Image (cartoon, rainbow, N blue to C red; front, side, top):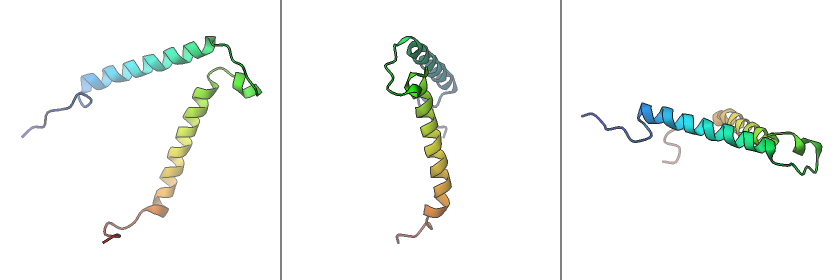
Length: 80
């Protein structure tokens, strides 16, 4: 029995969603270049600073979580 693919699983839709995502990302980063910055610190005035800061934070959290896994994982029947 063949399983029917959901909307997000179809290869055609995946590609379209990635294109839409990247287009929105580029649009937002471009708009950020033209919004006046009222910086309290010098790094606040760097264009797309908050986008880069958020991306770096997400990558850092993923790396930390991946490195913590060996310390936190338990056997399959640990709670039995």
